[in-house]
Length: 236
Image (tube, rainbow, N blue to C red; front, side):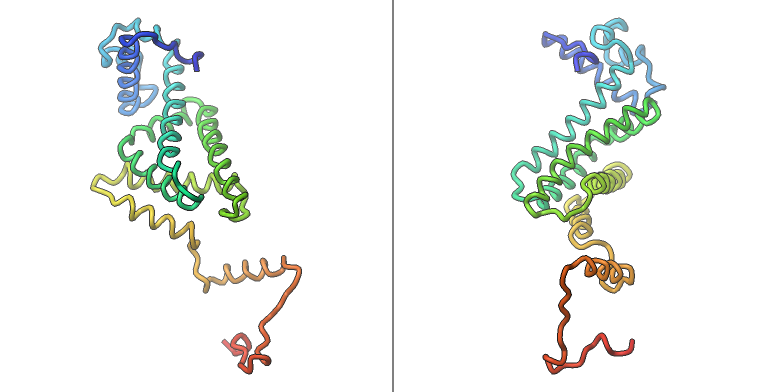
């Protein structure tokens, strides 16, 4: 981290750095990375132009620092909100709602994080790959406890990240009116708990048949024994 930022050692230095970070966030949010220059950042921060270089070597160093700090803030917030959850399901639910509430208060993070795809693709990739690794640790822990099905952890992590990202985009950024985040979270959990397909879906019945083929033994209900007619034998 010290390769990106020269850490201040005094309260005044911290206050100055905070002003620069706040100004940079505001301008990058409004104008984009390439539209925000160092002179404008220091002017908005109320410091001399040269003061910027007391803390950062370049605008890219500042931007990389913001990405890392945002990632840390997000994970810290989710960790706090899920720390007392007794199982993976409750942690997932608490984490989704915490994310929605957090991003609604900090919508600028979307702009700054996603712009990294165009500033430096490696930064964008590393941001989500690191987030995925953290998510996978929680998923794998849930698997060991029998709380999560045997699904590829990386695929599952990216699927869950995608859900949170785009639901957050809609209700944390697009939506300007008051949002019931608990209700939105409940709707997401319906999908995670039961899936999106009904039992009448032909594709789902096909999946069920495939799962049966993987069993070592097959036992079918004996309707003669029950003295009942086999409903599956009736013509549809």
